[in-house]
Amino acid sequence: MLYMILGIESDDGLAGRKAARADHLARLDALRDDGRLVLAGPLPAIDAEDPGPAGFSGSLVVAEFESLDAARDWAAADPYIAAGAWTGAEVRPFRQVLP
Image (cartoon, rainbow, N blue to C red; front, side, top):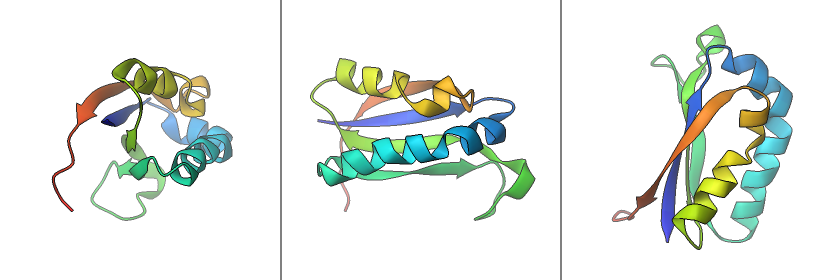
């Protein structure tokens, strides 16, 4: 089943993102390589493709996991949480309708 993971940005998320970006992306690459990743990306804090120092308000990942608990465990182990970029993650079941 698909799950939506909403990474919740910390007040100083940019520093944590820079520190953990490579490890964070490696986990997403693994989901993609397994054919489980639908989409992933940051949520700019302002209406701009590159928000610069305004940073991000969080991140969104939609991917397939075997259960809600597995999706929660995957999110909780994200390097962005360990690095302080995210304060945590909200995980919910997701049903893709389009495309």
